[in-house]
Length: 469
Image (tube, rainbow, N blue to C red; front, side, top):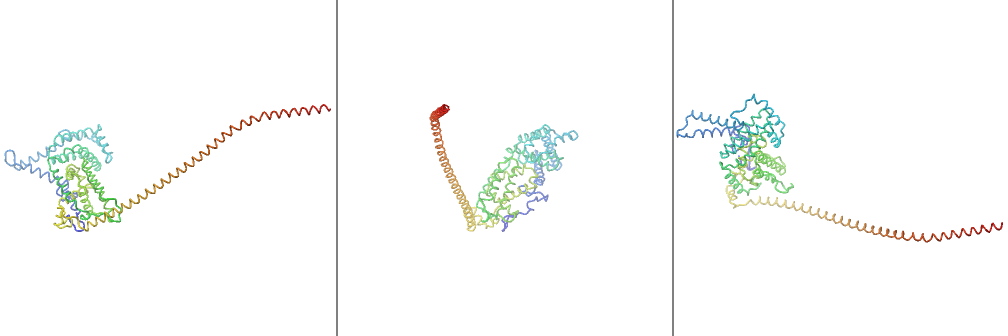
């Protein structure tokens, strides 16, 4: 199933599907079943184990008593969920609430995908007051009984989701799915601190064991997993899977199962993007799973087992059974299962070589080490070339800056010289204006005297002529 000399990891599409042949994605955590088939299989088995236990008087139950107790237990669980959801021992009568039911559903029909704030506003409106009261009552009850086994809490949450979905059953399926995603985020954000890594299970111990296992396998190279990596002709600035590693690490910071699934989907999308840049051929399922194993080994995500179990127990079933998120989560589960059972043949190594690597007595082979050294040298040369181009650009920018400073100083000197010349000309004109007005003032009396003497001589000549006559 897992090994192949060409690819390293090979999983067929049939192996990802539910082994009950229902058409949905299975999961190793559910022994190959989908969530629906697993619950149908696990619940009767758990009930039969509980009901077949000896009675208080020490005598085993007869078959009739077994059937009676089974029906009583089923009716009690149904009544409990009705009381938690509806607030009364029985749901309201349809003929009395039909009009009101239609008025309650109307605002939800215009709800946009991902508009969680809008969902909260509608839920707090007067028309949805009863729905809000049911959610509050369920949350208070779950918090009060947080000491219940985590599987019981999972059953109660899933039953509540189903009851809530039935309330919106008259709407189209896409709208019901959209509403239930908001309901899941509302409920599980509140219950996260009570049900995540619960004391009734061994998730914490399995987290530590998985982290130690991944840490012991940090010597595995991409070539051992047959992960396509960029060739020398492809320009890269580092590990192309770094965005995927970052996305899978962010999963632990989320509270709602759908947000954790979104991190898994984001990680998987980054893996496909890295494969598309690393290989000229389109990425296939084998390349994707191999690369996902490499990402998990390099990231070593915190509390990976607990996060996956949290999504399995409290996530919406349709998110895990089908669709893009279901496919990615199934592959992540397969990657974790592969890491847990990883041995030498899966990496095309002999048992002795694998044991030597695990005991740190061996290092990657010379050929693989040379390949890594060659890739590192190529990357260093590329970075050096970029650094040289950057230095050349900085030198050119410095020269341009110096030339600009020189030109500014030259223009400033020229302007200063022109200003000095203009200042001198202005001073000279001022001096001339002071000299010329005094000269004209001194010359005017002399001109007046000349005019008077001319007039006297003219009068004398005129008198002489008159006498002769």
